[in-house]
Image 1 (spheres, rainbow, N blue to C red):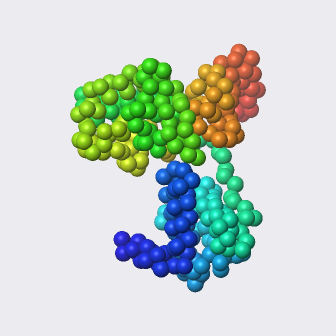
Image 2: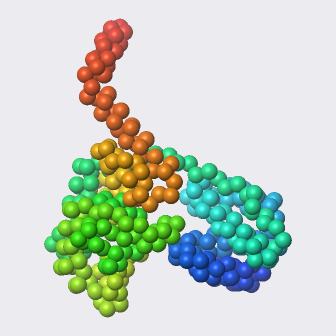
Image 3: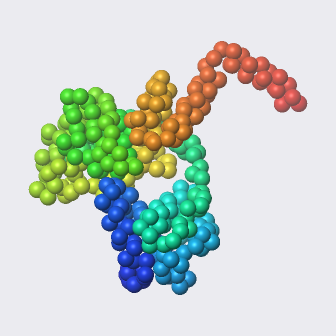
Amino acid sequence: MVRHYEHQSVIEASGFYPYLQAFLEWTEVKGQSKDTLKRRQAALRRFIHWCDERDLNRPQEITKPILERYQRHLYHYRKSDGRPLSHGSQSGMLTPLKAFFKWLTRENHILYNPASELELPKKLRGLPKAILSQAELAAVFNQPDLKTASGIRDRAILELFYSTGMRRMELVNLKTHDIDINRRLIMIRQGKYGKDRFIPVGERALQWLEHYQNEVRPELITGRDETTLFLTDQGQPFRRSALAGRVKRYLQQAGIEVTGSCHLFRHAMATHMLENGADVRIIQMILGHEDLNTTQIYTRVSIKKLTEIHAATHPAGREWEAKREEEVLPDSAE
């Protein structure tokens, strides 16, 4: 805790600080989401602290070689568990710098933009490490204790995650007026990239949601927050980390030991819909992906699954495998 306050005082004493405050204010005025604001603030504070350790105290002192040096620092940095920062994390710490220096240049605080040619690490779009099966999902859904108010609420949360594929942040931020029961739609306000979108919700999830809203939520309201949809046992909005921990416990209780928690339901929803014939562009709209290439990841997962099913069930495939075994067996016997 002492170290945190030391960092705070260093940053506030830095010549960067007035520019940081003005940039964050501009970010907020431009209508960027709270999460974008937090990410930019955290990334810039980290950079300013790094600069202070090298006696760099003003934006005017920053050059392209200095930014490249900082980029190498992030590449070689190791977390407390010894692991490096992922390409996505590195990019997430550098992207706000590009926005910051672009703003500084446009506002004539600096003569040229040293970050204009800074190349960000390419995010590696690998396949999801785990896709929950229908049986695994059923096991997870059965974990909440439906004799309790919190159990009914948690079942509604799990069903909604799988039915809609929404992000954890989006679920936490849901308001009661974002739910359109009659049209079976949910309004996602200021999702990732600060964009709004409508997403459909399935009948089963909708029934659990109505059950929660009508019979449980009134018991959780304390008067502090009358519009947030999902409330904790104390009547407060969920913190994202707390919600992730809760979902993780249900996964573990169901005997599912995989990396991740809330996002697993998003992966499962997209993959299962594609396997059942949904168009990838529809999935893109539901998930709120800006780039279709991001959604294509699930197509690759789906194709892999289809290939496995084809090999296991197609008669010609099974005959070929049997023939291979016959050819190998004599050699094995020797």
